[in-house]
Image (cartoon, rainbow, N blue to C red):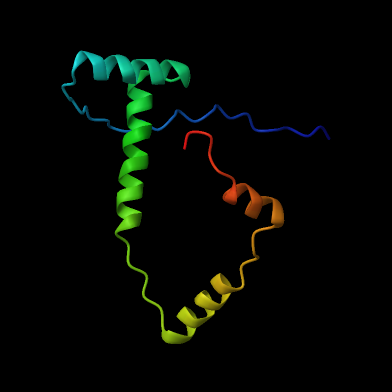
Length: 101
């Protein structure tokens, strides 16, 4: 007996509501944003939304408090202290005088 398969049509994409954010900028700022957006292959809106999203996430994470008990904090500090020392090449690089000084 031949096997039949049920044909389905692809689901329509979910529509989400979007709202506009309007800002006023100086011509030089707009040119700078447009140049950076172009260099990254994004539209101005995509570029600005990505930058704003990163800034918002950083701000929230910078103000997030993690509470741990004394034992967990001790384990955390122990791991930090156990981090490997920089190798000789890195130590030499860090001690090299920079050319602009």
